[in-house]
Image 1 (spheres, rainbow, N blue to C red):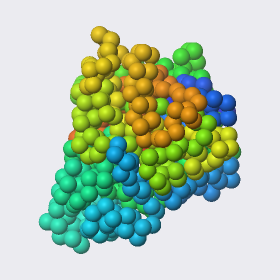
Image 2 (cartoon, rainbow, N blue to C red; image 1 turned 135 degrees about the vertical axis):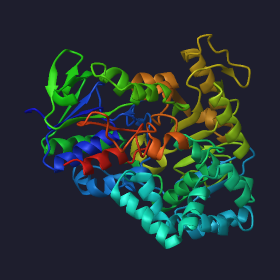
Image 3 (cartoon, helix red, strand yellow; image 1 turned 180 degrees about the horizontal axis):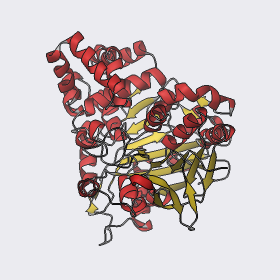
Image 4 (cartoon, rainbow, N blue to C red; image 1 turned 30 degrees about the vertical axis):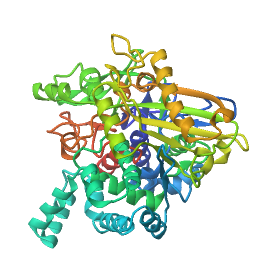
Length: 526
């Protein structure tokens, strides 16, 4: 292609969304991906046995199908073969003693289920998700909109006028409540506590984190409204659809093209990029980087004079806990120790709220959790084409894995002195997880065919943006989110260089598969 208008470094969901939308505006876009495949955390492979199609990392796309990006791109992506599979039972929890509850996409069913656990819990659930509905215009503008913008300023002014300044301050104060405080004050059943506590882990938070209650309520609303869909045939089909759409608009994607540095231009601008092979590419309008702050400011901008305060901000940027992934190919469908779990998309195995808190704290202290919180996906329940007829696939994600190992909370796994994940540590920890899983599945030993584990170090090896296996692009606490992501001085997705832009999980609105930063930037660029 001729010199592109925009060069995009990286090919995760935000980069793909930005490229697709810029292509619609008639911009020539070139995506450069250092790996041999596009997609970032979206990766589909037969990693266990032939005929078993696994989403290696990300698998659930509720954030995408409810996003402005999907609303804008759905028709075109559908033309290029994208389809989703659904279940009416997006989530559930199973405790070691066999108690369980399943979340439905019908509120009346959920109210009845929660009331069976404890009288009044159903009405409390309706009030909580109803509150998210009532505040949706404000909430979703803050969670997914350009914060430094006139529309957001006008929205806040309108809300302040409508509610009154004190009521608006009350809203923000309540939004800072922790998940533990919310659950213990609002719900009588410990099973209800156990259902929602694990979900905050999927946002990079813990039950004692500020604003984790609000995030959990938003998740409850989203799961009830849109479920937990997966891509029919695997996440690769989403990547294929994006690639076809970008190509149809005149864009280009190059894999195996590692960007070594950005090229200085006139007046302090960016002229383009230099690849690892020494070749140079000029960008007519600008460069968009979907990378971590460290990758951008310490590696790609090494030929630029980065301001001292920005250097300090980069050095102070924090990463969160790592993830551990475990996948199973099963000869037959699992027989859970509680009835009604066979159609659940994402099932959490946990002792409860205190168990989630304990495991999260252990991981934050560098310890392998004694009893980790296990999220079990059942892709076969939504998309039978993922495996042979009658067989099953389990997708396990553990959001409480230390980036750097200091020890084992159970005192049984020996970690190396350098604190690095090894194959021996990975498999020993996978054995611990498997023992918990087998306790919850009656026929597990008979149906297990093969497993494949990925430690945080393995995940980082596949994607350098997953620092220490952190899939969220950085710590997601309130002090490193919203207006302050990635830095306290950040303004939307601009950088100190006029035609250089920063998107991805390390920027607002943060991690997930919503494509929010790519969408917002593409909307803002002319």
